[in-house]
Amino acid sequence: MRNWNIIKAKYVTSAVKPEQYPVALTQVAFIGRSNVGKSSLINSLCRQNGLARVSSTPGKTQTINFYEIDAKCTDENSDLRLKFHFVDLPGYGFAKTSKTDKDVWSGFIGKYLEKAQGIVTVCQLIDIRHKPLANDLQCFEWLKDCGRNVLLVLTKSDKLSKNQAMAQRALFKKELNLQDKEIVLYSSLDNAERGKLINRLMEDILPEC
Image (cartoon, rainbow, N blue to C red; front, side, top):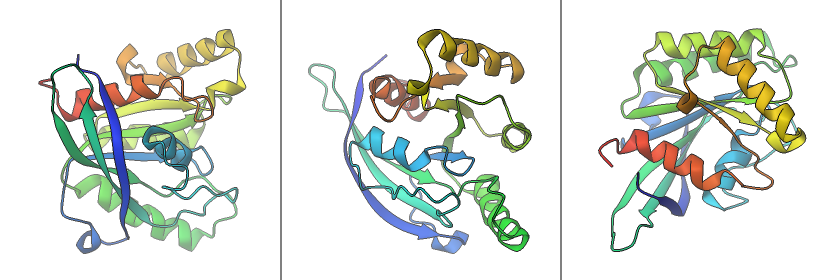
């Protein structure tokens, strides 16, 4: 397996309609409950704190946000580079959002995930401190029904001890019937798993590598 690093990232555009999507590149999408840490994860992977806007107000992200990523293989004597998109999707499950807003958001998110070209992986983020919630399970099953490759990312792993974190990982793995490579732990505070997650995503983007 090759070793990769993200060396450059920039915001491209925000969209709610297919005609607003940027020119299609390979895409990795991020979805999860409001305030689960999607923007923080993207900023951590890209090492740019202000790239994706982080808000303490759940439900703040209301558009599909596209970021152009430039990744480089760090193996000796390699000059392999690749551009692709990270796609930050609005959060689900925020109780104070009106039903009308929820219907609108789920509508354009659904169209993107069902029809967008070039999506190789959908990272579904779930707070590691909680048991699987109903809308998390529903989202996971819906993504699978859409034929999407899902990588479960348990965020905020720094909030638990190592033993507690591994116990939660085992719980989610059993509950969702996952293979080891389909679930990872992550903390956007210590970035300890940054390189591992980047390499894991690149396996899906360039499986031949």
